[in-house]
Image 1 (tube, rainbow, N blue to C red):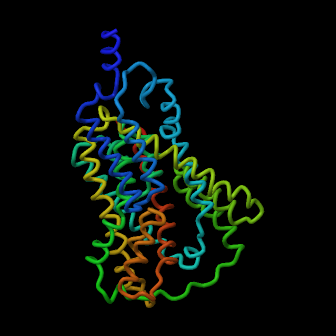
Image 2: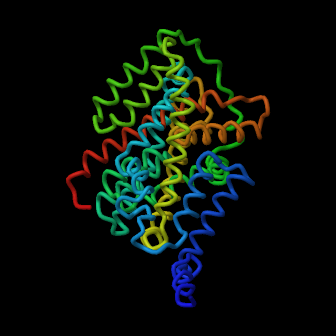
Image 3: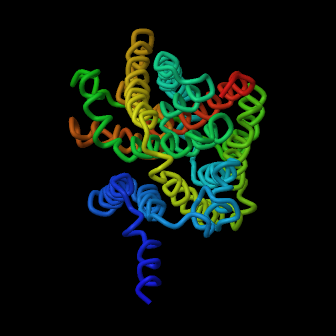
Length: 379
């Protein structure tokens, strides 16, 4: 009887746990705390944080419980991450929620979304300098786009072993936008620049909104065919919304479908941070590079807006450049709040969403370009 009791105790998580599991459980708990108490991107951090906690409960190997064990329930759920299914479904829902009218009203704001992608390419050079293999470096660099699904999609194709740390880094910095972006915005702009008011955009006709996703699909996916799984789904979702004839499908895409995909994506990505796989020097390097990537992306958008103002008769508020990253709608909201802190009557949200939506497209194209160049290089 005593032997059976000792054997039972030896198979419990309390007995099998070591300091690494404790560290990761604390990290997951912090994520959950930030989501609930501070309301930092709760739709992302709640499933991810809880996944980190669940994924780091120690278990006796061989029972088919872990996310990395073949034929386990969690391994099958993780299949949607490793194949890029969940990110593509998220893009479908995102497209069904996105209004591109502000972007169509001011097409020049697309340039700010493109400029913010500089964070990706500067970080690529940094990852090379730290000794990462080309495919790993490309996967790390995409964090600069501040787009969690795109980061996961590219990493699944180029460096699957890094999905955990890259996804956690990408979503962490997305959640910390209120902490990271405002100081950079204030550092790189003057009060006079932050007070610039944007004029009212022109009215967009329904036909333009219907035609846009079709034309955008052809233009973007012809340029980077490897971005099809993301941009094809994004523009399909948007066409469902704007066509006006399949409202039921559009509602499903922007509600039940994207919510289900977000839960499964966040939870399984959190679970992939299993302590014995996740805690290593490479993960710490990825977090450091991710912070640099996000900061450079934010700064690049702002600086490019200032450069544009040298040639434009009607000036752009440089704060909008910070919304060029594809963290929708967090960065657009933060731009609006920083602008209102200077002038409560200055409404920048609609204009910032134009940059934000172009950033989504830009990061997906950048991911497609990196995939094209890196797929035949060593992992």
